[in-house]
Length: 204
Figure 1 (cartoon, rainbow, N blue to C red):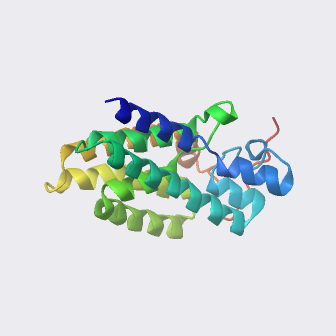
Figure 2 (figure 1 turned 120 degrees about the horizontal axis):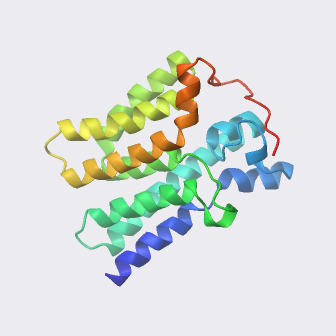
């Protein structure tokens, strides 16, 4: 039991490493949370720093999720819940990072890594639909929401997957919807920033 708790705690600390904040500090000497949309994630990194840093942030954030799940598999024994909880802990760390005064991102890239490792095919199906929606609408937030909503829905429709994974995916979905509540309001009112826009200027 001790090792399982250690795995979850380590996963939170791993998730708390905000690569967008670190890269913005290294490359421009700024706090990215004070620029663009104010979010510490890959999309805002694209707006503020450009394509190269954004791709790097995306990959590193995805890898955080993958590493957390594998840590849970390594230390969790036969339990399905420990890898899932490690993945959720990494997402919580990304959203509320202890190293950066608990002001982080929205956790989608890390959630991609977590869900792709826990249930690859459902995450892949949901991801394809999400990417198509982003390509058509240019709303990254909409695609993100589609991904986290569809993944547990697909898991529920596929009886070969244990319910543990459905509940884990549903928890991740709830976190994502909560973090995107402002984006949802903007989408409803047609005020959400599209991919390629610089976004609102943020002053903190």
